[in-house]
Image 1 (cartoon, helix red, strand yellow):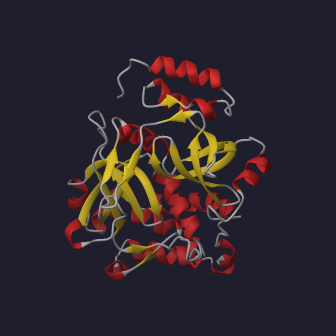
Image 2: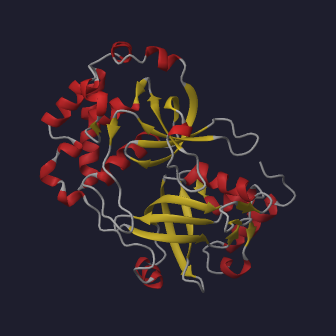
Image 3: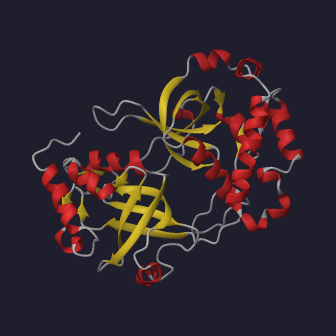
Length: 337
């Protein structure tokens, strides 16, 4: 139901944006000089409907720098955690922004420096406030036009954003669709609250739609299976990347090439729509599986570039142990990028 609404609303928002030229909107919003000094980046992650994690476009010398940017002037519904449910429309709001910009080139301007805005995720960059431009327009305009965030503060009087919000509200788009608000709240099955082996049996090794939510290491992922919203911890079947662990002091300890392996996977899978085939459960209750994305099988890719080794014990559970071995041979002696 949520997905149908998403697809039907997107053309409306695009039509709304096309009624105003990029030039007039940027100038009216007082951001022509800001847009001119905007820095290029790639969207690496979309934590919520009003926040993006961007990274430098050049990864030739290792993982590039990152910035966590909350978009100024708007507020999107808050997503659930283990202690609180979604705010109405939180998932649809985040999913609209995720589908719009994940992996895409953007530019950005920081308006409040990190030193004054604490609160980034553990181990990640601190949260900053700013504007991100996508296809010539501030993301705020794309989001408000689709109805997936509300204006706040001085933006309530903004001569471009305020009329866009008024139109979205009048047409009942996104968060303004109050009649369907209750049904938009997900029922999440958190990891540990269900039988992992039962999930493997239920799906019968058939690929399931999923979104990769977190990449602790190159071969260890956290994902959300769809449409049932099962949160799973997944170890790549038959594949082992160098380990990463965080000490008691919070400092991350990385084996050689561990960070490169994690970045290799993050840059291809984080917050992307993928398919996951579940193939077993290890002795700790962690699911074993294979992740397929639009470019192929992430396990084979890791092995081919020398960022992983075949894990003997779990490779026998995979559907393609010979392919894994062949990919490993291709990667041996090769230098990881």
